[in-house]
Length: 293
Ligand SMILES: [Fe+2]
Image 1 (cartoon, rainbow, N blue to C red):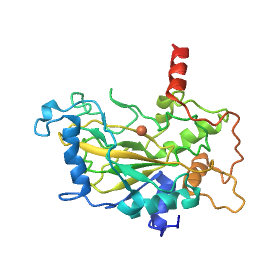
Image 2 (spheres, rainbow, N blue to C red):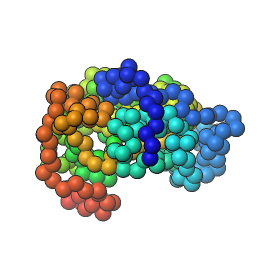
Image 3 (cartoon, rainbow, N blue to C red):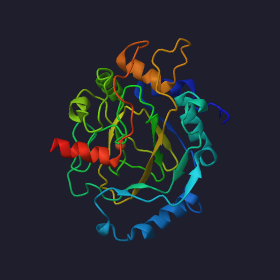
Image 4 (cartoon, rainbow, N blue to C red):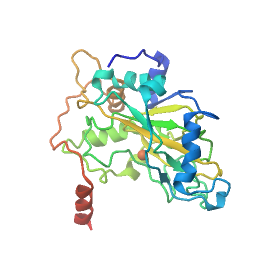
């Protein structure tokens, strides 16, 4: 696929390298008459929910089924271009035909009955700090989760279920993985230890149509929705074709690789895994859970 034009300015790239995230504003049309509005309107019926009765809304997160999808390249070309730019070009993507769909992660009223837990190392009962990826063994150079994108289908307001992020978490998570070339199971990360090494916590509020790109090693968690305004988002995962490389003779590091090198405080790194790079099935995860009980 052809390389899209760069959309992130040098300042935005520098922001990503320093803080592990960048926001691309106004990436796709929202509001009356748009595809997004139709998907949202239809979601109430799909889920059997009454939009006029907030007391009846579920206090657990909803994962909706994908019944329709769009090509991100056509639907949100600037979001697409930003993904490609941060990952180092379309040739580095496992599948450059990125798709988004109406499989919303919806937060209608999660944690509504608990006191507000502000951005910080603490969690509430509904969500813990983590990095994504329960479907693969984690290595520092793992290609599976190339970037974590937050698609904001609706406005994300303060105390309205916006994702919390810890921009200075990439260093601690990268160090943990760098010390474990034998691989880390998704349930093995000491999330609490890792988040307590961080001091920068933010609530990723955004407008409808925004796309927030975050580094795959960014610790994040869901938040409570106290606002009686449903929050609709998706996590957009894009994989690399090849493992990351931290020792490129030509210096052509992707921004994803550069963030990790900065987090580790080195210019380059010889890193070689000592385990098996593999995807985990549900059976793998269940067998491991059973073995630990
Ligand atoms: Fe997550």
